[in-house]
Length: 233
Image (tube, rainbow, N blue to C red; front, side, top):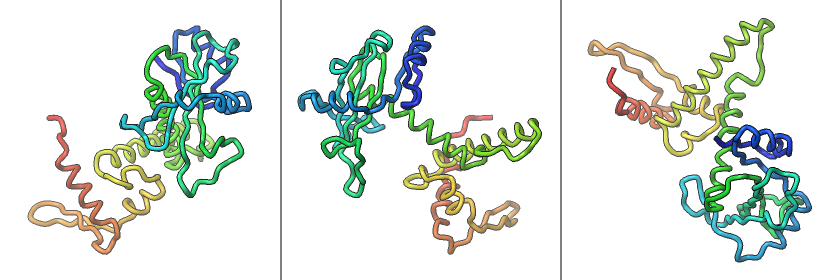
């Protein structure tokens, strides 16, 4: 079992508690002055290409380990610090923590083996959890609107169901930008389309507004849904 967290979870107490329970960790690590000095002292030959989420090398991104350049004696034994360096896109605005024209992120892990790029990709998958939390907040769980606990519990269940339906709809029925767009955009482009359910030839047919800019994408989504290999009842 591996626990993952952003830099807010990178505390010695939390890491030690995970170690005591036999749980591995991959925790975001703040890029402070000591880490910056370690990055500057890292030779160019120590950097290896980073991977995309699909496991392919990512252009303009590298990873390196700087464990030997930091004092980690207060952290659980076997802790390692791995840094990811990435060239920002042309329109990105650099911050004062960026070094040598690159953006750096670091994480602390106690995974003893594996390629650095694999460990970095595994840690970055935590961002998917944060994405789902953000989507959940945009789908109703940001605030509980009722005074009674039972009513708020019902609201939470409905909001979580809506979040799951939205997630699976995008994953199963859409491709491209609509498969990853934010809930507000998806609601406007897809869920707000004008349609009418009519009876014809002893069946029902959903007629979409043909002038809606995303009507074709929605019709394709229904086609993909009907063609999905659903398990037999």
